[in-house]
Length: 240
Image (cartoon, rainbow, N blue to C red):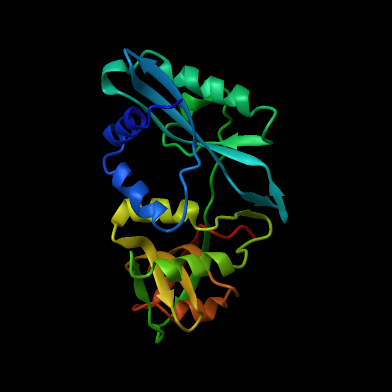
C-alpha cells in the first residue's frame, strides 16, 4: 500500500504547490488517477514516475495511449539512475496495455537513451490582416466559473479529426490552475460562441492554443474577439 503522505510530500517538494492544486482540482469532481511508480529509501519515497491515460484521437479513432508525467527525484538522491530505472519499469508494464506511451519534455536527448523516439512538434502559421474585434471575452476564474468549465468540456466538439487530445477537462484544469490559480491559464469565455478561447497575444501576433465549444466557430468570428488588430496567427491546437 502506498504511503500517501510520503508520496504527496515528494511531489510537493519537487513541484511546489502541487498538493494544494490537487485539492482544487478534485473539487471539480476529478480524482487523482495517476498510477505511481516509486523508489523508496529508508522508509520514504525518493523518486517517482507517474502514468496517466492520454485520450488521443488519431484519424478519428481513439487510441489507447499513455503518458508519463511528474518525473522527479529528491535532490539528495539524484544522479543515481533511480528515475531511469522507474521509467524502464513503467514502459515494461505499459507494453502490453497501451499502443504507445508519450512524454513531453525539454530534454529529449536524455529520454532518447531510454527508448523514447523524438517527435518534432509543429505549429501552423497563417498570415492575417484583421482589425480590432468587437466581441467580448472574460477570464475564467476558479471557483466561480468551475461549473461553466465543466459544461464547456462536456459539450466540446473536436478541433481536429486528424490528431486531437480528447480531454474531458481533467488535464486542462490541472495544468491551467497550477499555472495561474485562481484564473485558468489562457482561458477566456465568449458568450457569442458560448465557448472558451485559449490564447495569448504578443503585440499583433495571436497564439491560438485551443477552442472549447460545442460548435467550432469560423476564423473570422474568432478574430473578432481580440482587442488589437492581428497580422499573424500561430495554431497549436489544429492539425489540418
